Amino acid sequence: MNREWSLDKLYKGYDDPAFASDEAKLDQLLQEYTEFSLHLDGDAKDVLCKAITLNQQLSLLTGKLFSFASLRQSVNTTDAASAAVLGRLSRKLSATAAPRTALIKYVASLENLPELIESDPLLKEHEFFLTNIKENAKYTLSPEVENAISLYEISGSSAWSDLQSYLTSTVPVEYNGGITNLSDIRNKAYDPDPAVRKSAYEAELKAYDRIKDGIAFSLNSIKMEVISHCQLRGYESPLDETLKNAHMKRETLDALLGAMDEYLPKFWEYMRAKAKLLGYENGLPFYEMFAPLEGNDRTFTAEEAKDYLVSLFSTFDQEETDMIARAFDEAWIDFYPHDGKVGGAFCAEVPSLKESRILTNFDGTLGDVVTLAHELGHAFHNHCLRNNSLLNMDVSMPVAETASTFNEVVAMNAAIRDEKDPVAKRALIESQLMDANQIICDIYSRYLFETAVFENREKGFLFADQLCELMLEAQKKAYGNGLDPEYLHPYMWACKSHYYSGNLSFYNFPYAFGGLFARGLYAKYLKDGESFVPLYKKLLKATGTTTVEGAAEVAGIDLTDKEFWRASLQILADEIDEFISLC
Image (cartoon, rainbow, N blue to C red):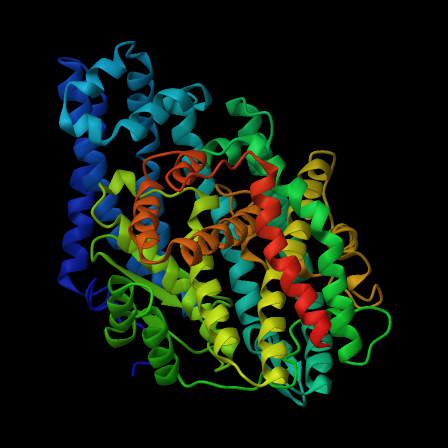
């Protein structure tokens, strides 16, 4: 089986004639797009249809070119050629800001837009896309200003984001008399040896201390850019912008966070129970949060992971099972950590191939297999959207984590159900709670931290030590007495790439949303059986053409009702009680 993904279906390399040809086509298409935007006259229906066609063509071509360069760079952040290509493509695409703004203003000016949409099948297919353009037009600036912003972002938030990625992927980490990288040292948090876990934690903190100032400048610059853009556009706050872009009501977020806040003490009980099992009396040290318990020592090769997941999902849906097998067999996955490769895991859709590419830092644990299931869930979500128009595949942040977390729940519940040994079962339940603890307590801490950063950044620059203090305050509020206050993680702001985007703020609460929404869907699956699966696929497909609340309505769920979130959290609370009883 492959160790690395293959990008050959895109291009053989930057010297591939097809790459040069597509880049030349992009130049021609950009020129056509610009010229079209300068003459928005004639029949409105024809103008709208032409605009949709051009946007589809641009999305397909830029997606292909950018996917190749960004995927190459993610496995080698020192790749100068990829960095140069990404910079060149970004500059070219910045030229779309002015014509895109002109089109937005044009659509917003159409008082009879609903009638036009009803008059043509292509427009009707893109009703959600067009309606959102009209609704969001008030946050769009003049074409000249939008063009300037797009240009400045290249050397602004985009460059600062690259710096954070570069620093965290290349900083040498001194450990056991040798040198390793952050991805490897963070994986040691799962090591069965407590001495290794603690020493790795200490080495990790020392490594961040060497790069903290550069990352602090990255975070400050990105967040100030976001604040400035929100003020220019007329958003109430970065959170207001995030919710509007996510097509999600504030009432839904309030219901979600309110229910989470009520259940936090239950998760503190879980952490203190685990701490006692490991011999700690003052709560769980941060470096022990991912400690495997006795009985959770099963390891997998990549081949075994494939067999396990294919067998597991064959009982759920054959369509997803076939896709999972393809992902392993057709080199969609880049498995193992190495110097220069970004940490964590992600799934990237490649629309031109109607395939995904998945990056992991696979180390063979059950947790790594669950991570694979998670990313393959994203791939299946992409698969369910594949017959949508490209303009109807833009899934908002909250529902983007639905299929991935659903897969996690399927994988872990199957492992728990099939385990007969009580010690091993306890370990598996704890492993699931460990992940749930991340989407509740950790995500809540990230939300609190990012909120505090935005509130304080407007007042002045936040140095690294101040950012550490804000992170510690957020962790104390979110983790309560579950963690040992002497052993927290002040640098969690430095290693999470989610903070470092100029166009995507608050990429934290969607994980809690996805985790709890998925559990509510899984409970419905257990109740309804096979009849649930078509409904589930319909819901995933709908996420590209409706609001967050509208997608949930496909399954008969009201997301503004706190009781839905409480019911999902109670599922986890019951697991915590079972775990404590087994302790």
